[in-house]
Image 1 (cartoon, one colour):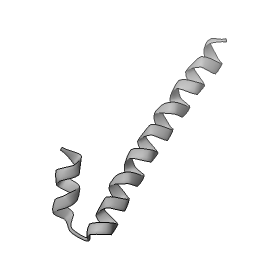
Image 2 (image 1 turned 60 degrees about the horizontal axis):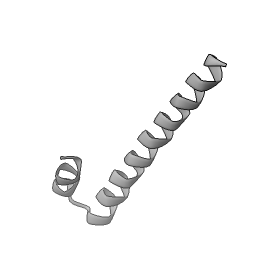
Image 3 (image 1 turned 60 degrees about the vertical axis):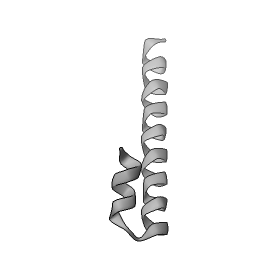
Image 4 (image 1 turned 135 degrees about the vertical axis):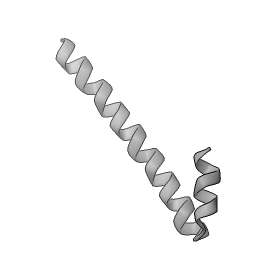
Amino acid sequence: MEDTVEKSCWGVAVKAALGFAAIILLIWLGSGDSATVVAAAR
């Protein structure tokens, strides 16, 4: 029981991290300016 809960928690964390990285990447590609990425990361 604990193993499945732990795996699902990691799955959610990984999906959240990938989703956040994808959003930052899209903003960076859309703007073409690294300053926007720094502003978005803060």
